[in-house]
Image (tube, one colour):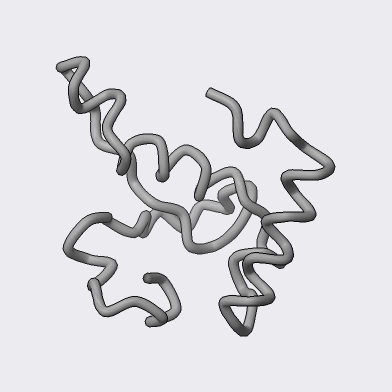
Length: 85
């Protein structure tokens, strides 16, 4: 979605964080809206935002979908807690 590999627009589901005060991690962080109900707290987009914001810059800037997948596999092998809820 971020690089345009998907037909769904990024801005239809997520909001990019425009706060440029030197965030940790990568430069394409997503804003997580405050959840007041359990159904929205455990929804897919809420979980995806948490994991996306934890990625490093190298993984986010992957030039192709295959490179992105291989870097995710590397993260899964080395930091299994990244994929656990």
